[in-house]
Image: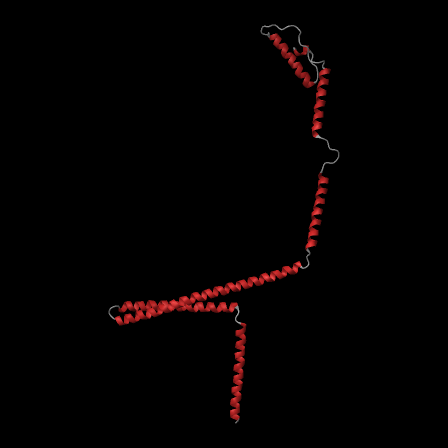
Amino acid sequence: MSKISKLFKGSSSSGSSSSSSSKSKHHRSKGGPSPQEAIHRLRETEEMLTKKQEYLEKRIEQEVATAKKHGTKNKRAALQALKRKKRLEQQLTQIDGTLSTIEFQREALENSHTNTEVLKNMGFAAKAMKQVHENMDVDKIDDLMQDITEQQDVAREISEAISGPFGEQFDEDELLAELEELEQEDLEESMKSMGGLPSVPSSKLPSSRPSRASESITQAYMIMFVFSVTCKSVIPFDRVFQ
């Protein structure tokens, strides 16, 4: 009886352990693998299938060489080699399709994982931005900007007031006109002080070509007039011909 009881106890204990292990496996399967783990396993599968491809390609080359070797000498062996080559080619075609499916699945999983991380980070940034903006009031910001604008206007007015000309301001055109009038008056007074322009001879000039003496006298009058205007002094007539 003791042996039977021990047997039932052992079976019960093994059953409990198997049930606990199945529960743990069920718990793991319920949680599911992480994206990184799934991507890693897909990569391992790709590497395994790639190695299988290389092996099949070498076997195909060997079977082709065997078929060529036997040729017409041993048709049976050559045909068997070609049959094996056909089976290997079928396997290679299947592996190519499987690799394409696995690569597509891995790329889709990587893109999904990337999008998930991007969305997670964007959500994290949005929460941080929301937390920063909690202490900000739009109305207060508008008031602050208005105050800044007003202070800038005041500073501009102060700068213009400081940099502007100090004292009375006059019209420059009026001052230039007044200066011209003073110069004209000064010229008239200087002409009066000189007794006016030198008198022109009253005698009638000869109708023929003027002589050298008359030309010299005319030039002397011109020199006296120009010098009188520029130097504001009168030159005696007799000094011109010295």
